[in-house]
Length: 234
Image (cartoon, rainbow, N blue to C red; front, side, top):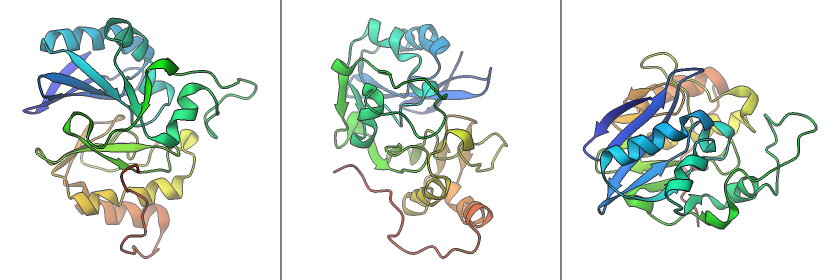
């Protein structure tokens, strides 16, 4: 696993095989916030990365609950049984009370993806990050804005398999692709210098790329101010 420093307080931890998967560690107030948990096989590497930073893990925040975003949490939470925070729309899926509409093999029932005793609804600014609800990939998909470094930790809001390009989230796992594309308008509001996504890498100035991305996947649909659902959880 590769650990890469993205800013004075944010590190990316990722693997390239079987496909690129990145999660992030954010330092604040003498501790760490883990954003997403990656694949199951990433668990030991995440534990090693956290220990290598010599700071206590204080919490986990999730963009959503798909297998490649929570798989490594079993090892992490065994070492640090900290709260796991997610948007309220995502909690029922994480508890195993609901099945995701897409990407769930036929005949396989819902099951807890995270220990329900550790699950909590999102706080206002966990670890100094500002959550923004950006549904579409999943109903509760959330991104995290680091205003100090103008860095957006975006989960599966986009992919970035091609350097410097915005791609769609994985289609067969995406609940509502049109909504997911519209939710990407959050970059027009925030105008981040960089966006870091789970599947791919870091893309600079994504707000300059978003209009063409949107036209490609939605056609000439007008972009109406305030029409896109990317508000923080209430």
